[in-house]
Image 1 (cartoon, one colour):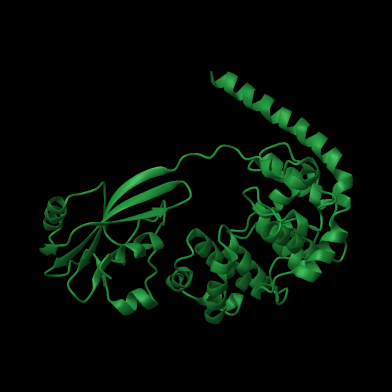
Image 2: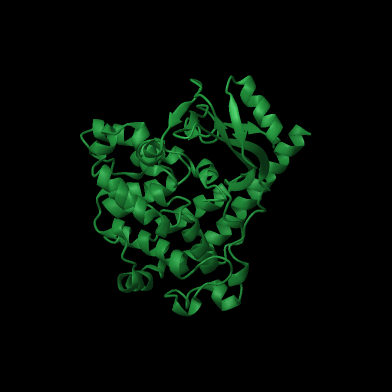
Length: 372
């Protein structure tokens, strides 16, 4: 069976390469005609975004990391706050990890912040000089194909595409790409096809123009603004009425649902928090104490007694839900008054939660009591 599965996978991979080869041949001429109308449109219509003020690699890198799987409007405030606290890569390298995580609090995907911090230390150790090529940038922690392409092209005018979801959607519709855009081989083929048509001395603008087109015109969910598109005359999907069918996507996996009981333990002045394990989801971050499954009030009180904590009163449960990429937490929350603090936890007062302790959104929403 294993041998048959390996054989089938190889046949599928070979077939995909044949399809991609034909697609690249059919699309080469079309893509060569994209840069002129696209750049003219971008120069006239580009949004005024704070990270477009200059080509400083620190600022571009910071913005691109923040923008991964996060909306532009959500990033703006974080970007300004981060730069105010860490205006240079050296300042970021010198900051503590807790400071970096607090600045990141609420953006999610906290591994981005940790990798940002690690990469800053590497760049700072080299005198604050960022790598200037795609391959060198790719070696920094947390810098993948897309981010390396964005920095290399925007900051150093290298012909290196930054292929994200927006760009994949634009190219998929423009060329009627016949394969799911989530396939690594497809992403690589799009990268290579774009690499061949990057305009000299305008690489950074071309990268940003492709992103911009996907963000504001060639938008998802089958409702793009084709009448405003500078590439409408070239777009095969527009001509053939297939815009709503593209891009093709592989079937999504269902999220795993996890039930949890989250405890807000307080003596009236502080609440209990603790660190998560150093591996896995939200690794090493602060959390509220939690337990697997949905516990009854009686089970909560008994558990606290086993922990050596004397509970006074357990208020009625309320529910919160938080969605991660591949899982959902369904949380039954209890606010519990206790007599004495346990040394097993860190006890955080309001200023700690506001200024130093980065509590992920999944737990912070549990502090929003129904009566507040």
